[in-house]
Image (cartoon, rainbow, N blue to C red):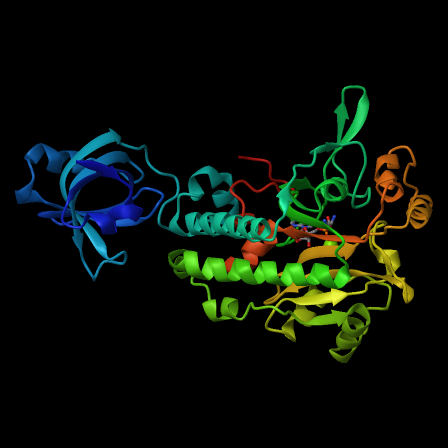
Length: 431
Ligand code: 4AD
Ligand code: MG
């Protein structure tokens, strides 16, 4: 007899199998017990008929409570009425543990309660579906970058200086020195691109932001490709191709999950390159036309601005050429117009906001040194980064995709807190 998982049942129709499962629900008449079983790979209904099993099996099954763990043995039967298409005619159960009363009941719970029980909440069909889509998005991105000849490099988490400004740095001691948790692996990815051409990093990044919005996490995961000999326009092309590949992969490989999440897949089917591009100047004009009179040239967009801009498009939209003043020190100014930089934020549709930030990088050592002065960056701490421009500088570009915001968008979720197994947020470090 084979020990299988629920996702494999279609290959075992008519055969007797054993599956390790948790019971997430049970209905029972006097003669039949319907066991709703899950094993993390899928769900199946087990049907236990009183006069077809030994009395001790019937009695053992009766004791099972919600989330009890067991090995269930039975015959796989195709059943078109079943949501999964299959049922299990149970011949035997072997209890591993009769679970204590499960705290997450069928009734509606508040968000705080669910977040306090996140370690159990992830067992729910909806949460498990999100985590599977997350894994598929990661897999698709890595596959895309792999096919394009990128090499994965792992930047350090503990860093001596900042990448994205000092306002939201997490400080820690590094023996006698000061250290900070990485806000972005970009600067290290740039060094690696000079060694390996096209690289990407994928890892956790940290922002000590006192923001309590549906888009902000304190710890989030970023995918950061960095490419030697690629300019601003080339950078955008990689981004739109990558997101098309991600959307198509999820549509293809996560049909069940998208169904569980009740995602409107027609929205995802539209995610095809090329994506529209508008300049920051055009975005400001658009906002003024739409009645956002408050925003002035030189100011950064907030969430309501991004949402309004996105409403004009059914694909993600690039906003390019932001004012130099409001962007990071490393971005290359437009040679024709140095008051703006060769950068783009990619704004997702449906109000999900900025999912990618990227730019062409300054390649001129003198200009970079000037920026150190203007941004009061320590010459010593950033000496190695300037070296990259002294020893064979080349035009190069890169971007950072926020994984959780991307998952929220692809899954159609209200909040990024459900996109990561254990979210770190303002006032939330447990569990
Ligand atoms: O725009 P950001 O700050 O860009 C960088 O860090 C660059 N160094 C990336 C690069 O060019 N290699 O962050 C990039 C993306 C954002 O577009 C957003 O999707 C996500 O990271 N992000 C956050 N996601 C969740 N919570 C937060 N607090 C985030 N901050 C940024
Ligand atoms: Mg940004």
